[in-house]
Length: 121
Image 1 (cartoon, rainbow, N blue to C red):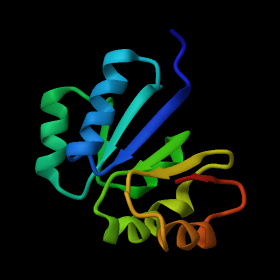
Image 2 (tube, one colour):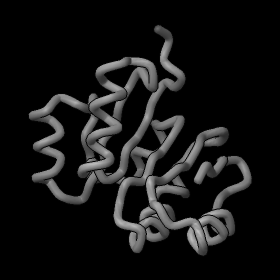
Image 3 (spheres, helix red, strand yellow):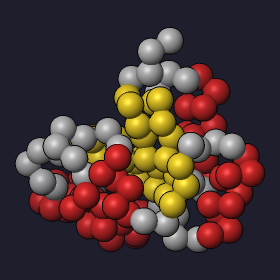
Image 4 (spheres, rainbow, N blue to C red):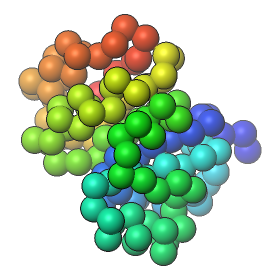
């Protein structure tokens, strides 16, 4: 099966983010390269132990390597994380999140999104 993307970056590989990575690894259908990013070294160590990502890092610049960046952090932190990674995202890439609240988050992210990056809520 040919993966949809060359690379997927999951920022916040907690319960939801690690589930995305696990399934992507199992099927091979999502991305050739799986990236896990988190500020907590213990989380990254666990990701490595589980072998659910090819690259682990705490550097938001990893977004430059990804065709799709999936933000998997608590709703209150999504905007802050987006502001950290958006400057690094390459033209034509996709930003998405797993937040369950769309009210203000969608318009807020749309307002800070570069023209050459797509946002899929």
